[in-house]
Length: 222
Image (cartoon, rainbow, N blue to C red; front, side, top):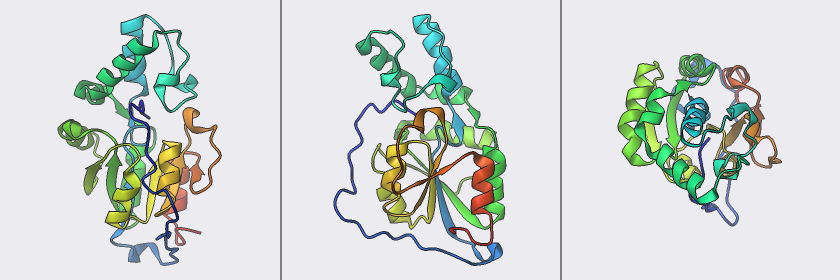
């Protein structure tokens, strides 16, 4: 979950041939099958530290559970639009925000379970490149073992997934999840701010437990 400071460009416009393949192999034969995970809103819960910063800066109490829009600029908090947008840009560029964030419930267990099941796991994030050091430090501090982390602009994650040969992805941005659905099996992790969009190419996961149950089975993509 982030402020979409730039409108996502549909990098996959036009007809695309889907490269997703459906597997029905025992889990222990799946070494090298690649799973791509978003970071913010999927592994990393930045909602609480963002809410604390909004309260400190503007004196407005808000809770992430009430946020009904992925793009935080669209939150109806009664704040001056230009000032709030500048605040969000500053906030999401600050490494300290990510240092104080905690993992989402179930995320640490889920990543370990995916790896135990034979998945190779990479991060595909819209965080800018200057946040790579704090990202690596945060992942290590919370025992989240990813093979790689790829930083790419909003709207281009599907290009990274296609280049890497990713089989499945888990996102919280519904628009990004739909783009990813053109090149691989795409899952949208349920959050309050992504429930309004009707999904065409991606499928919804209720929780990390749901993700583990679906992706760590004998038939992964049933």
